[in-house]
Length: 208
Image (tube, rainbow, N blue to C red; front, side, top):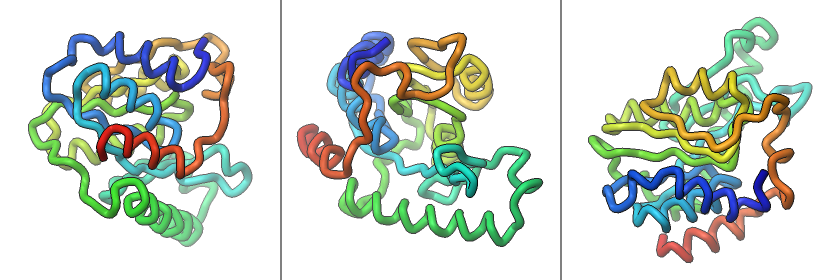
């Protein structure tokens, strides 16, 4: 469906046309969401920053997860989490992700706080939404910080996940919702794990 994240970002930006020159804040979820967010923010003439939310990885399969935590401590967990893991295990995984969040804030935002979003329209961008936990935690953060309107935007997600997110966000813009959706990577011709250095390069290019 998409050649790469740049292609997806340009297509997503067009779908967000009504927010062009509207003084919105684009918050991209690193690492994969940053290249998509860059294209969106550039087209919309918007502010760009990163919002750091981390999946809480399952012990059996780190690619999967049982929830997510945002940089302000906003926590989202699926109902099944406490049925399969003890409180001690959950807390250990949360602390590990908090450490990674601190590292990423230092690396990608040079330790700076998030931009002021109180009363503003915020567009949360990722390169795709699988289970939706990191986006959900990010929405909670934006609610806590009294954002005016929260728009979730991504090139692809499953239909079920889109419907769940619609209940939490003010608007959800997803370009593709394949009938058989298993992984975000399946929607990209050229997919690779984005290194930290590339995220920094993209943010520097935007003037961050």
